[in-house]
Length: 183
Image 1 (cartoon, helix red, strand yellow):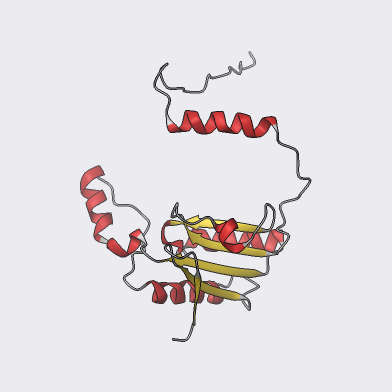
Image 2 (cartoon, one colour; image 1 turned 45 degrees about the horizontal axis):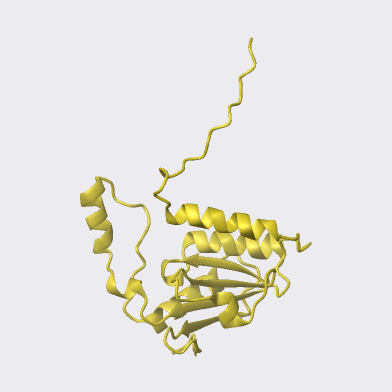
């Protein structure tokens, strides 16, 4: 019986003269790594907080919240909504890595406010398969923050739900507005 040979597969690269954005990112990483020094941290966030926020490129969470490398766990998705996968990440964050607080951040002008669940139907018509996930579109950002807070607070998998707060980030001013979970 012969031993399988492991072959190195050359990573895909764009054709010469056609640099892609990923090529530029990889090159930036090389420059970053050249000056990189291991910060000596472990995976447990220093502030013991998990941040759940929208993936919107206009939001620099660390700068907006005054956080440094190693301070928090960050979970980002479209809308910052609390989905099953968000609960999965928060459960690992709390139970295995020591976080105790959860801050939820939605924002003004979110793209999910202009979508509906029809998006899934349109995808099905285009690709021939209906997505298993919900779009989680919403019209009222404040109400969606409340729903996300409720999903975190009532999850049986999360042992630490006493410090869960939700906010709306204003993309024009940079300010957070806290949402009352009872309104």
